[in-house]
Amino acid sequence: MATALSLASCLGTDEPYTAGFVFIKPTANVTMLYANNTSDSIIFYSYGNWNLNTSAAMGGNWFSVAPTSGNGQVVYSLPVSFKQNTTGESRYGELRFTDTAHPGDANATLYFWQYATRGDGSLGNAADVKAISGTDGSHYEFSYDELHRPLSLKVSKDGTLLHSLSLSYNNADSILTVRD
Image (tube, rainbow, N blue to C red; front, side):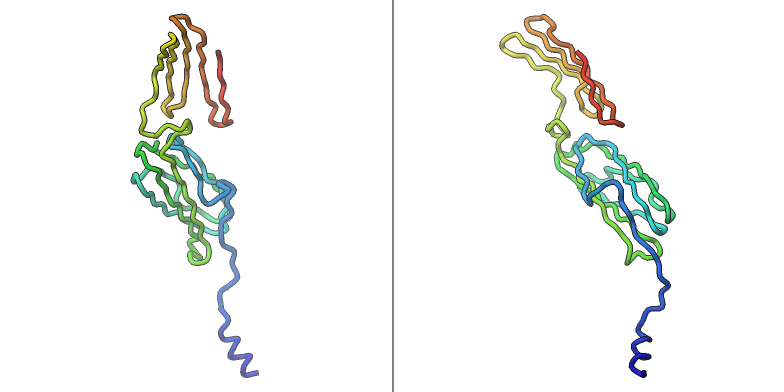
């Protein structure tokens, strides 16, 4: 009986609690981005009140998230904004979510890793190709949007226009439309 009482005194007196995070997006701890990606989002559920600390490596303050704190028992969708990577080097950012009432027990770390290359494979600090001329009389002219994605392509040979393509992007649905 004396042994049981002495062991019982070692039991914690904390009330039971639920803490932690359920991430819907991203589905992995590391999210890979191209140099010309400028937005994403984090969707999660927090059991308790939370705060978010961020740090960026290589390139300084190249991303932002808001808000950086919130209440528990809520589903959040946090927009994340990125600057285009024109450093010529890949870089990463760390986001650490912490339950404010139980920081040692409930926390999660996510990373954004931004490549040095754009989605088309060119370096983020490379100039866009405006025109290409072939020795056979062919000529190609390109135009781009602010994310360095092609908007138009004109193909001609010996001064005769063969194709005039226009490209449009629907970022919400990830749809690319090409018209000739």
